[in-house]
Image (cartoon, rainbow, N blue to C red; front, top):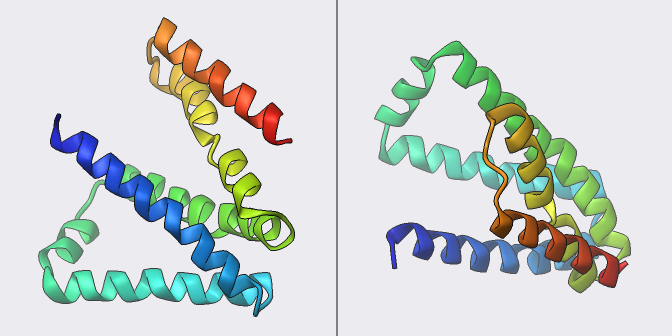
Length: 140
């Protein structure tokens, strides 16, 4: 197995734990205050990263403008707009239902990857898409 696989598994474990922590926090605070606190955690992580490895800040500032644009927009969408939607769903719904449905984003990535990145459509990917759709229908 490759390092990629292990990093992906570690990501899944972390991202699987985080919604439970968020649900516990959101049961004690409103959505937007929760988002502010979560974003503060991201900012704290960025400050620690820059403190430990200042060359990352230098590389980020010197990055290509299109890279900066795409990453800033993705951060705004994922960590702000998407997080508001997720927190709204999480506050009112069960973690065991909200997370798998919100986690169906690979379906959107599959479609946009085909449209914007000219990625190939394979049988394996199509089976994955069908399984995602089946999971969403079952949890609905």
